[in-house]
Image (cartoon, rainbow, N blue to C red):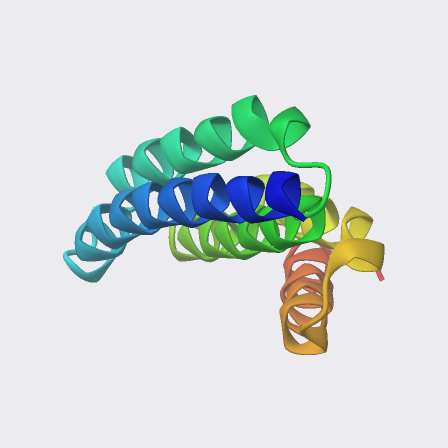
Length: 123
């Protein structure tokens, strides 16, 4: 199908752009600049969300990419001891579980959220 092939080309271009932004955020994370990293990751999320409606056939791929970014944002908040924000972003990953092929992404979110709840003393 020509439409599906055209959509795949657009998706690949978008994913490349999102991955470049993620890499910039990762560099900041490794420097210990967690707040800056979150801001950059949010740019990647906004780019994904803005383009989500364009992809009829590859929506799951984009949502899975978005969930990975949410996991990364949760990791940033964990480093900054912002447990409520960590729970919020882990929950966003878990909400997207039906669209995620890689179960490790969801498992990581459940683990992070569980530890964050423990720090908040919400057992």
